[in-house]
Amino acid sequence: MSLQSLLDLPWRLHRKWTGGTDDYRAFLFEELAEVVQDHTLPRILEIGPRDGIDTRRLLQFEPEELILADLPDKEARVRQWLGEIDDPRIRLIIGNVMYDDAVESLPPFDLVWCTGVLYHNPEQLRMLRRLHDFLKPGGVLVLESATARRLFTRHANCVEIWHNEEKAVHRRHHVSQNVTHLPSRRAIASWLEMIGFVEVKTSRCHRKISPGLAATRAAFIARRPLTEARGTYYTHVELNYVIGKAR
Image 1 (cartoon, helix red, strand yellow):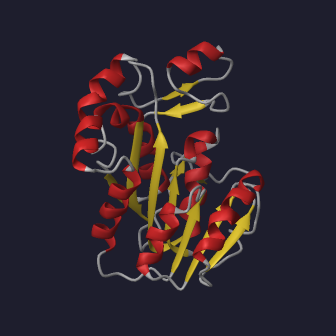
Image 2 (cartoon, rainbow, N blue to C red; image 1 turned 45 degrees about the vertical axis):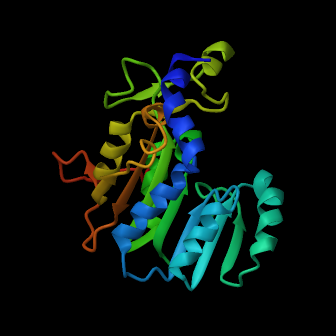
């Protein structure tokens, strides 16, 4: 057992004795509910629905339409639990939101829920830009991701590159072999602000599970502003380029 697992043991025992949950997404959903309160969310997009637990939670907002987007190799698993829900408001789109136009061609959303996806994509700044554009002005983004692992970089404003690392290193730090970029918590927050998100709120959902989980994952709730405030660069000349929109 690792040192971090030993440090987290009291939290795990406490949840076992009290019947508490190990699902940090339950706490993240509670924080979202506090942010939106009585606001309606007619159109919701969930990226990477996995087990359907969050899908069921999102239906509590009583949307007019809930779009689920997942990769082709996840389709069979999603359809298995999707049949149990059997809600006509749900529509499944199979494809990669970074490359397929299926989601981009839809009307904008009031809420985008994206957990456990960002760190699997090496084009992370571009992905956040795309999530921003999926939202209507005033729409809300819920974003959760694994974060930097190394002791001297996890608190810095940086991205760790895990390309060509030995398998043993990946195992020791609990990093999947297909992960090449791990952004720090501060890096994700910086990207959100650079792109133009406002009211960026750091979630405490992982901390409610254990300090160890909070050290290696991060979640945010942010809003696309009502007035367009697109982040640009190269602003010392007349040509300004929108961050994350390079073709």
